Length: 163
Image (cartoon, rainbow, N blue to C red; front, side, top):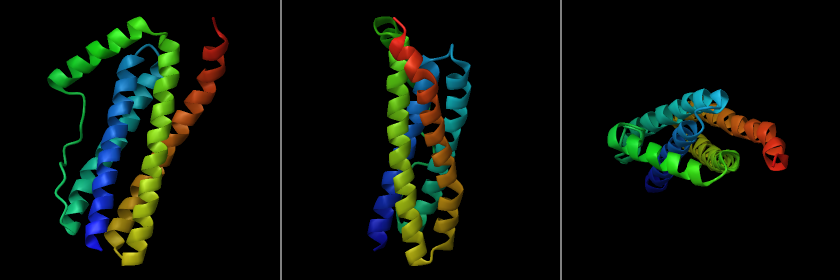
């Protein structure tokens, strides 16, 4: 049983890292949009915190995870920024924003489901520490999801109808 729980923690750790990376990349690509830039970075920090907490708790289930979240540091950030500039130069930046927001929404929805699975598992195992972690992190993921959804609603019509 603990093997399955460890697998769920490992998958959620990976998914949170992916979500944080997507939020940071979208933030970098859309610097001119202050909402996307600043809120995207703030929301990415939540996922990075979740990665750290999952790494700590994974040890309880014999899962070794990297406590350092994937991020935009050093050479990798430079490569991502260059790639973002190339993509932005060849595609309509507004359509790229919609694409980024859709991807963030999808990933946040998946992360939310993973937190729900982990919460139900923690309840069944009577693991109060794991349950507490889910009660702290899942609401933040739901806020990330709502932000992506609201940003899509705010921007979609204008982007789609503007020549």
